[in-house]
Length: 71
Image 1 (spheres, rainbow, N blue to C red):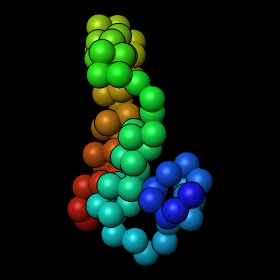
Image 2: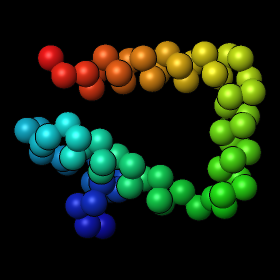
Image 3: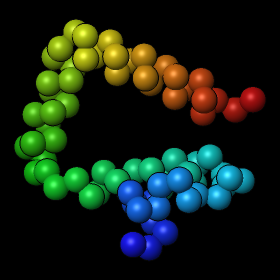
């Protein structure tokens, strides 16, 4: 696979790559998921309709925010 951020590319990104470029490449994986818009909506609904899943997601986002915030 080409160096496009896909699973085969994971871990091979340059160490000095800009964080936003790296983040953009991480979203390429979402395009690899074979799911219809309806299936994606169902998954997101399940995530946000379940208290413990929603709380875990919020914690993960808080960690990402801390990691991505400029110094």
